[in-house]
Image (cartoon, rainbow, N blue to C red; front, side, top):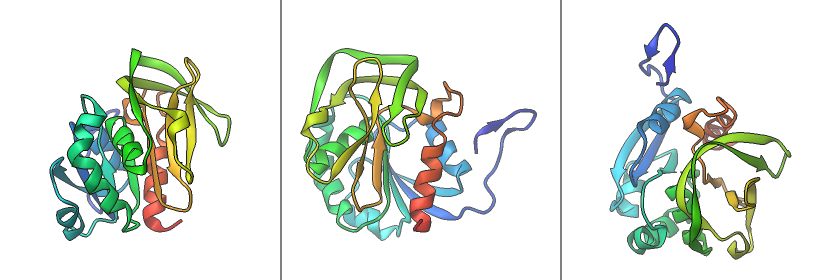
Length: 203
């Protein structure tokens, strides 16, 4: 689990949920954040089939961060994610995982003229108006006006108004562009991991 003052990294003892994490280049601290939220994690390669993911009987599916062009990675992952979406298992994506989820839902991505790098990026939650201070590291972005019907923008960059989060209406599926585990706020975005576990609880 995550690092704690005077304790260091803890060990998980009684996980409540089983999450299958599809690894596009996952940061270890994201996995620690999921573990701290009560999740047992099985990490699988990006080339894993939908059948093999479902065979693991996940309570939730996590789409990790990673490098590169989401459209290139999407050539082999988008068909898998589209199959997984049909089964209604809660799904959470971060960074590249957010972009691949968007492609799987029918949106588009594009290369940015200047990417978002580093900490202290203000992002607004469109539902509450709250502003999170976030850490970011990406050179591609989901095109906001390409979101299909039934997919809503949830977060927006206050630097350049680019899309920073989405959710599927009526389904337990959401994602964010930034890194909630990186603690620039330092805990502004921890609620996203709790939201994921709440969806696995059915609430």
